[in-house]
Amino acid sequence: LLPKAAAITMGGLAGFVLSLKRSGFRRVVYPTAGLLTMAAFCYPHETVHIIRTGIAHTQMAWYNFRESPEPTEPAKHDFSPPKQ
Image 1 (cartoon, one colour):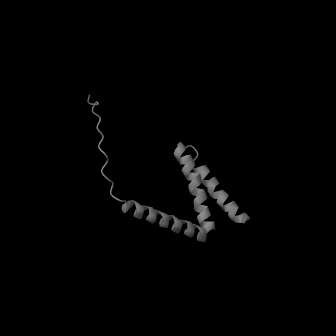
Image 2 (tube, helix red, strand yellow):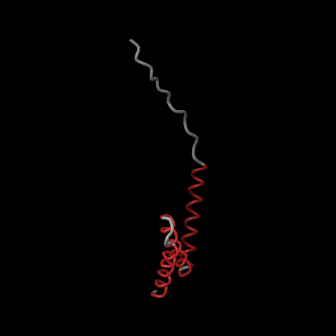
Image 3 (cartoon, rainbow, N blue to C red):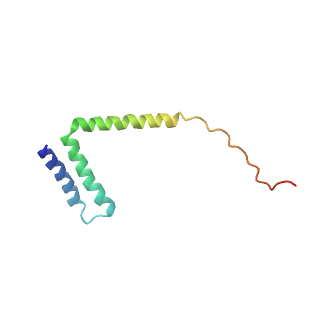
């Protein structure tokens, strides 16, 4: 457990060092990518499970989006002034 935690931490620190003197977006992306990459190397089975679950959820959402019912015709409102 401790060697894996150290490896994941080193990945985050490597991303942090690479992101120095960069824009704000890269200061967030590089350490996150380092952490996630090292976590994927340290826990490959869990990573595969998470990826497959994400793909299944994405496919289900796309199917539900594609098979959505046709919208009904909206009610037409009469915005003319009232008749006296």
